[in-house]
Image (spheres, helix red, strand yellow):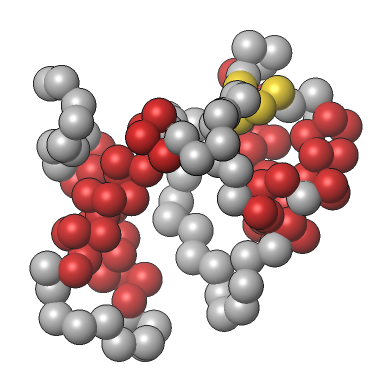
Length: 126
């Protein structure tokens, strides 16, 4: 897992809140990466509401995790937004979405080439 990628995390039904983000992402993945990388680790999230919850700020401070500062409404500066765009295009080219358990595998199959570098993303020089 510390090769730069984590397994695909699929949030079960419901809204992603600050509590869920802290419990399911920060505690399980980010804390582990922070310890492996060391003090130079910087978390790159975005300004999504769950990422900016007070309990998230408190958790990051208690774990001595620094986060990258982003200007408001700066989607084009965050490389992950280009990944989401490529993933969305890859998934939308398939038959209409249906809510069933197999969708996790469908998404994982499309993330694979992007995550391993075999899928070329627009806006990046290769």
